[in-house]
Structure formats: structure tokens, C-alpha cells
Amino acid sequence: MSNRVVCREASHAGSWYSLNAQLEGWLSQAQSTIRPARAIIAPRRVFILGPSHHVPLSRCALSPADIYRTPLYDLRIDQKVYADLWKTGLFERMSLQTDEDEHSIEMHLPYTAKAMESHKDEFSIVPVLVGALSESKEQEYGKLLSKYLADPSNLFIISSDFCHWGQRFRYTYYDESQGEIYRSIEHLDKMGMGIIEQLDPMSFTNYLKKYRNTICGRHPIGVLLNAVAELRKSGLEMNFTFLNYAQSSQCRNWQDSSVSYAAGALIVH
Image (cartoon, rainbow, N blue to C red; front, side):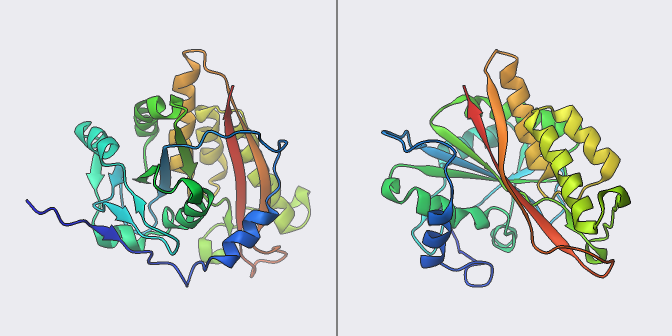
């Protein structure tokens, strides 16, 4: 049996993102919703759930890698948690090629590395590629991951854009009562964001069935909502708040296209 360390390269660096000054600039512009902290508790383990864009998956998949490279420093995969997840029989093993082709998890690695730079030898990551899950599968994975979400030493990152609008995305929903197309998109997205803030997985599923909004991370979001629902059964209080929303461009006619982005945070009381 080989002891060779398998590394996933930062395959989208330079084309999808650049560093380091760019990261510092963005992070310096981030606005905090609370006053400066006197002390922090840094996570020891960061779960990153990202949707699969390139390969058909009906379940979730784990990486074959030991190390995820970033332009800052290497991130170590928590092999103990991976072993525990693998024992459940619920996970597939993706190929290294599939892993490196996918961008949804990688796009969060530079931010994670930069934010944790002063603790870089003290934490690990748990990347999970999420397939096109059924409602029952979202519930199953949510229940499985809920114990990790309950652990305050863990942090969860959910990778998702919001509406992909335009003919190139084969999605052109338009509610004329909202005015310009981009206003309709914003109204649609914020309707979904409001439902996510309610932390109700069934309402989110019904919203997606009704409007078919092209939220690429709908299944990772569904897993998170089901994990929260499981923890709330035991009386754990949580709330989710969206902090920012943006569109890549403002669509005004049928030839236009845009992608929406939203960022939020889950707080445990």
C-alpha cells in the first residue's frame, strides 16, 4: 500500500482568481456586523460543501487527495473525519481529475487560507462534493452532518451562487410586475433568501419546485437546512441572516445575462 501523499492542485488559480493583494483588499472592505472582538475561537475543522458542476452525482463524494494546494499554503484534509464518513456507505470517491475540474469548493480555499493564516497549522478541511440529491437524500446527509454542525470547533462553508439568468442558462423567468428584468431577478432571489433565513427545508424545496430558480448550490443548501432542522429538534437555537447580495450585471432585455451572489451567516445561540 502506497504512502504517497496525493495533492489537489489549485487548478483555477490565475484564471478564476488571483492573490494575495487582491484577497487582502477584499477582506479589508468587509463590514463586520458586530463590534471588534476581544477574543475569538478559531475553528479546528472547516467543512466545505460545494455542488457538482461537471459530473453527474446522485450522492455526495469525497476527494482522493490528502492535501489541497492554494497559492498561500497547503490545506490538509481531515482523514479521520473522511474515514468516518466513508464508513457510512453514503459517499462516493471522486477522481482527482473530477476534483481539479470542479471550481465550487476551490473558490473558497483562498479565503479560508487567508482568514486562518495565523492558525494555519491548527486546522484541517473536509471538502464534500454534493450531487443532485433527492429530498430524502438531503435529509439523510443533513442528519449525518448535524453532529458535526453542532460541534463548535467546526465551521461549515456552503458554496453557491444564486440566479443564473439568461438564454445561455436556459432560464428567463420574468415577473413584469417587478419592473426591469434585474428587479424581477432580485425579487426572486430575495424570496428564496427569506425562505432560507426561516431555516425550513421543506419551504425551500417547494420554492425551488415552483420557480425553478437556478441556484447552483441548492442541494448543499438543502443539506445544511436539514442539518439545522435535525438540531432544532433537540432545542438548539439557530438563526441565519443574509449579509450581502449582488448581481454580475443588470439585465434589461432578453439578450442580457447575469449571475446573482448572496452571502450569509448561521449563528448558534
